Length: 161
Image (tube, rainbow, N blue to C red; front, side, top):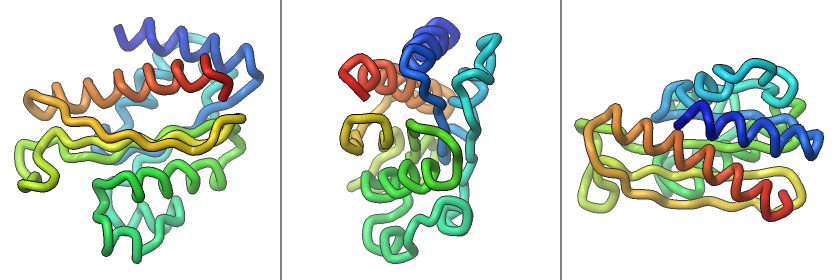
């Protein structure tokens, strides 16, 4: 499933002459791995950032410390800053950022385990962020986040990004 989605994404990016950059936290590079499993992905995948700690989000992608303090690392606001920062720190035209709580610990009443935020930036569409609540263990949450990211990018490119 991941491979097939990554192939479709690659065709959509190639058709527009776009390169993609990823910024991942809770998926730990899993999205970049799924993308680079496709032969020829170097034509449309520019680079990926794994920014697990808050410090790395700030240092590598320029996420504002105030954003982290006010909204937390797991939020639409942080995901959006990660996506914008990834574009600025790369030579890509489109970005995706993922941050969330994969579990088994770390959740609370407001943001339970399985809470994941994706943000998209670049292309011709305005930046966008989405909130998800996935079920299952750590591996299941991470896999669902990767699928949602691939599907979201495909959808975004299909609607003019």
